[in-house]
Image 1: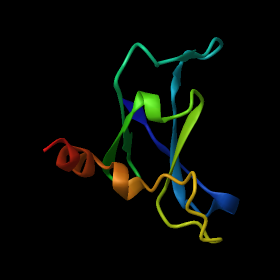
Image 2: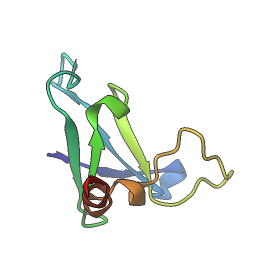
Image 3: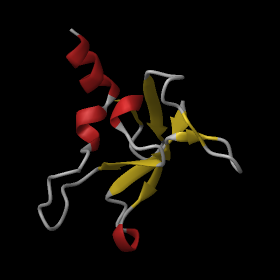
Amino acid sequence: MQTASPCGWRGDRSCIRFKARSGVHQSRSYKGQADLFAAYSPDTSQVYVLEVDEVPDTDVWLRLTPARNNQQINIRLAEEHTLAAWAARQD
């Protein structure tokens, strides 16, 4: 399990992110080695679950609030990826 860190534009903490790769000096993708990412955010007290094949090989960004410019394409809303939301999709 990864730990998600707060991020955002000019410190607004509107998103969280976690690394989608292993290693410090030599990055390796998890594709083909794992099916899911689970990342815990101490700031939101939530676990977020995403399929490895759905994310880039770098960092994963989840929006806690909608984008200020109303952009929706290529935006991952954190609320859609909580552990509870993932479990509901499995039923």
